[in-house]
Amino acid sequence: MRAILAIIGLAVIVILAMAWLGMINLNLRSGALPEVKVEGGKAPAVQADVGKVDMGYTNKTIQVPTVVMENKTIQVPRVEVEKARQPVEAN
Image 1 (spheres, rainbow, N blue to C red):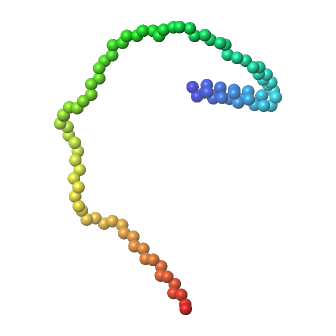
Image 2 (tube, helix red, strand yellow; image 1 turned 135 degrees about the horizontal axis):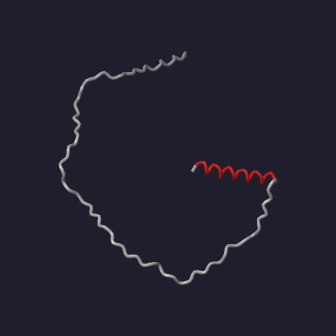
Image 3 (cartoon, helix red, strand yellow; image 1 turned 90 degrees about the vertical axis):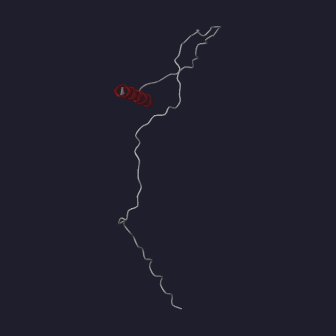
């Protein structure tokens, strides 16, 4: 599929390049679409039997994982920052 799209894209680029270089002269004439009259008509009748979908809740017992939280003392990284002293101004 990609190969077909690549070939079509390459063909369009080649045609545009040839037209730009003057190797192809495209003479476009004004045109018009044909007129179409729509008269009467009726959509076809369709009868269909469809299934029924019912939604609701029911109670079931299932296994659910639980998480227990407890406090422990551990070592964590610590960063201390000491600000630089301000220079003393001479009076």
